[in-house]
Length: 137
Image 1 (cartoon, rainbow, N blue to C red):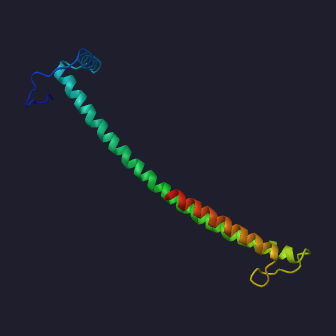
Image 2 (image 1 turned 135 degrees about the horizontal axis):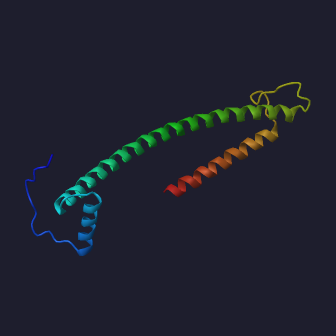
Image 3 (image 1 turned 180 degrees about the vertical axis):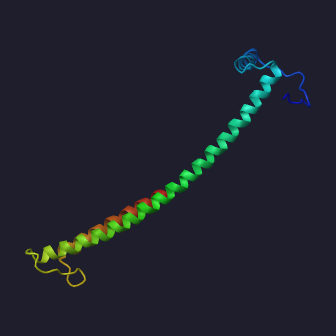
């Protein structure tokens, strides 16, 4: 079914290169005349714009999925913090008693070595946060 043309543009000027491109598309797509080649190019442009929009939507969905993964990673990191605290408890016990018969919670009695290590780690974290905050300002 042939499309009905409602308007025409007179005096469209093209460079020789642009004219060659349109003619090349006309030949490749086996279009009967120059106008149909121009219409084909316009429709192809619209199709590409729709494709770009679809890709942008897919990209947004991927970014949302990435955010969910990052949340899972943060939760796993918090779990690792709990495991670290458990290791500190065991280390504290080892520092007080090398034979591993009794467990002493850090709440009950903290070995000075562990206390110093915790202080050092807290200071290190505070320094990293200060550096990060300074870079952001």
